[in-house]
Length: 114
Image (cartoon, rainbow, N blue to C red; front, side, top):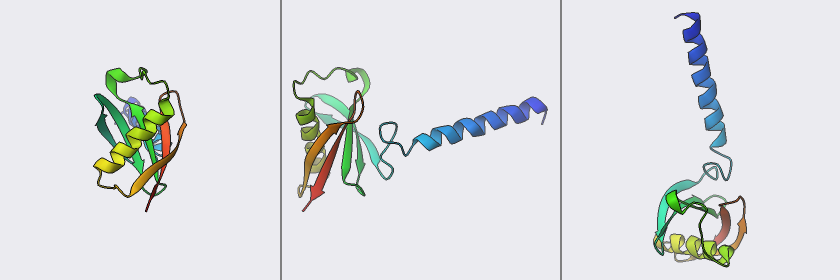
């Protein structure tokens, strides 16, 4: 391998390492032990990250709905989305509680299961 080949390989390894390091940061990819997935609620698609270890759900808009919400009380809307997600996952004994804004487009809902 030529010198430039080593540099290219090194750049790929460094870039992959940097991207992998972001995976555990809330708001960038996942909540550490979370599971990401698309979730449809009232005609809109949301990205939901569910961290079952910390009992937290992060919701963010998906695709073209990014940045457009139209709700007067976004915290309440996001709590409702988290609750609907829990119910759809078969966890009717779980309840979304406090919801807070964690970035310009993401809200985090703490939940508890009975």
